[in-house]
Length: 273
Image (cartoon, rainbow, N blue to C red; front, side, top):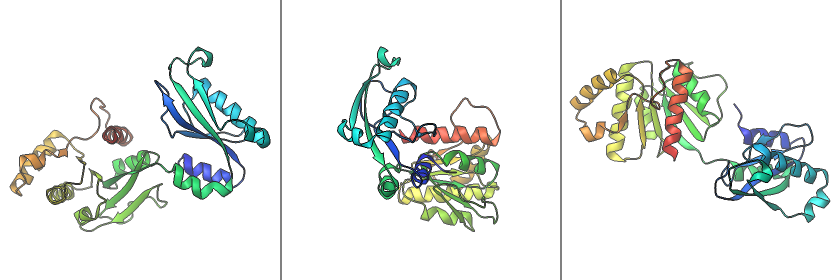
């Protein structure tokens, strides 16, 4: 599953583009500094977005003018100011400064370094239906996925973008090797495995305190049972309070794997703010 950056780099091997980047903003605007889109020749779909609407239409037109006449483009300012008021038919009221630059296949290494988004590590324990749906949802989002299962043959034959798949037996043995700052999602095929992974995460928290989110799939009844068993293993109420169960943003009632995946991904995105 390729993201916008992958698509841009692939297309640049065949044709140049005009890269339009949000340089700076003032007030209420549709996109943040660093947001970008790549504009190719007439009739060729663009990659990325700087916010849509009339602002994007104007930016596309300007980018194509610069592509068509590089000599004239060199005499124009690299950064243009756009006020999002009545003249653009957008009521945001803010100001966006857009940078225009021609890029070619020679710029691919620099663009790969410059445009790659920072990725938050996520550890997903479980390759069942929800695990597969969640991996697909997370692939285009700003997460680097470490996907772990104790069974063979559960991962897709072609790895998803920014996904590292690991077979671990026992599955909880992978917990000490997780990247610092990992958001952990636990949804294995077995309640016994789930319990062991939760316990391993809490032990790591006791030693290092570097897992900002530990989420366990299941009902409140499941968590009550787990809580009792974890207390018997010596974990304190404060330690158990670090586990979120059920997982997913509240108010989404669907049980389909794809619905659960969207709710959980939304919860992880909330934690990035």
